[in-house]
Amino acid sequence: MSLLALQQDFRRWLVEEAPEAAERIARPDAPGLGVYLNNYRGQLMSCLAQSFEATRAWLGEEAFDGAAATHIDRLPPHDWTIDAYAIGLPETLDALYPDDPEVGDLARLERDLGLAFVGEDCPALDLGALAEVDWDSAAIHLVPTFTLVPVRSNAAAIWSAIRAEETPPAAEILPEPAHLALWRAGFS
Image 1: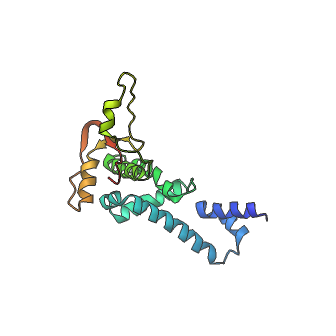
Image 2: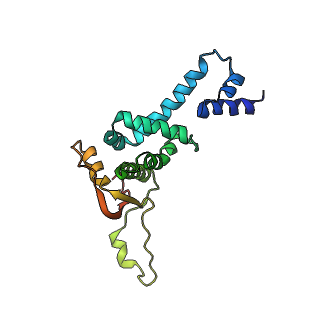
Image 3: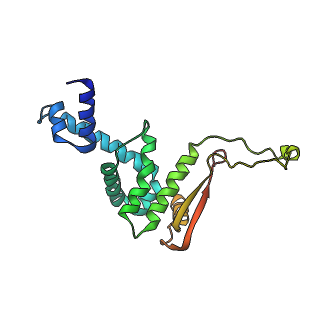
């Protein structure tokens, strides 16, 4: 067996628990593959739990862990860093909770706040330099971390209450869809 074939079988075992791949890697009664599988899934569960603390608090640990397990089964890691793994969870939650839009909205808010935190830095606007601007040809650019998060619920109020360790309000559907404007300025 080539190294490439071994690596492909090992990945299939981790992602799909493919028994035929496991048989080519190790003896069927060998306990080692289960350890790798448990570690793989545990790291992905931990990544999701850390990335979506407020969503986990809103859903409850058991429901969140079930949704995270569904996400792991649905979408294996696809990037060079585990940090990127959390990006697709809001869509999984939308599919699992179609009648509770605050769940996906809350996860999108947390995801995009996390992305803003690791986004490109931008120098603050120097108010003294505004006098020197040629306003006939000036172009204003938003900071690189600016994003609009679509919401259908009061997810921002829920997130704020959970972060402040207060009782969150009941979920409410907004009269019409809206957007939350997010960006990072320094460490805020």
